[in-house]
Every structure is written in structure tokens, then in C-alpha cells.
Amino acid sequence: MQGQVRIRTGQIEALAELNDTATEREAWKALPFQGSVNLWGDEVYFRIPLSLDLEHGQELVGAGDLGYWPEGNAFCIFFGRTPLSRGGEIRPASAVTVFGRVSGDPAIFRLAIAGAVIHVEKASEE
Image 1 (tube, rainbow, N blue to C red):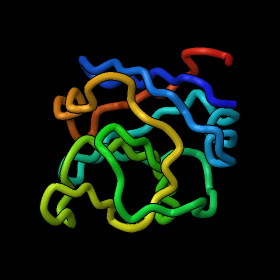
Image 2 (image 1 turned 60 degrees about the horizontal axis):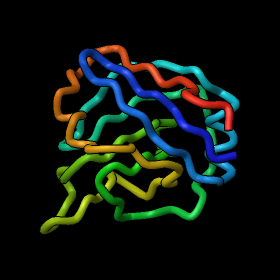
Image 3 (image 1 turned 180 degrees about the vertical axis):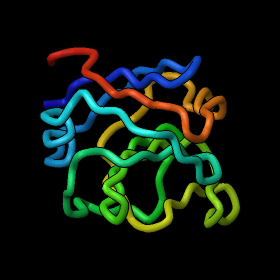
């Protein structure tokens, strides 16, 4: 499907492009959703109303990647190092399904506040 989503929390608003994966299709159907921001190093994550298996799991991700973390039923936004990172890598707590990427500079998520409400909604129907 490859849609575009809008992510909003506090003063942050970002667009992201979704990949054409089974995880993306399920997330797209579940939109809109919201959660409560959790921070883990330079990662924002929050629980979403999906329970999916790992799809092409990745132990390392890039800045701006959106991931689905099956162990926590969580939507993850990676924008820098996590507590498990070594060197300049970005390492999730465990393997994630990468299903999209933030458009623009993902460092904006450094302004996210733990406990704040975060919203994800469709920005396009394509």
C-alpha cells in the first residue's frame, strides 16, 4: 500500500513514508491510533492496538526508521543511539520489523516528553 502517516506529540509534527510490508498493511488498517510516549535512549516507543509476528526482523536500524516491536506490541521511532548501541549503531532492545521511515530530520523527536500523548494518523490514502 505504501501510505504516508502524520505523527504528532507536543510541539512535534512529522510525516513518515510506510514500506510495502504485511506489517505496514496491518498498521494502516488500524490507523488512527494514539499512545503514551516512552523513551529509551534516542528512541520513542508506544503500545499500539496490534499483535503481529516479526517480519524480516532487524537487530540494527537507521535514524528515522519506524519499527514494530512484537515483544511490546509497540510502534518505535528511532532517531539515535539506544542503551544497547555500540559505536555509532542504532540497536533496538530486540529485533524489530522496519515498516517505514520519517521524512525529514528524525532528531526532532529529541523534543518528545515521556508520558505525553502521541498520535499517528493517515496523511494520505495512497
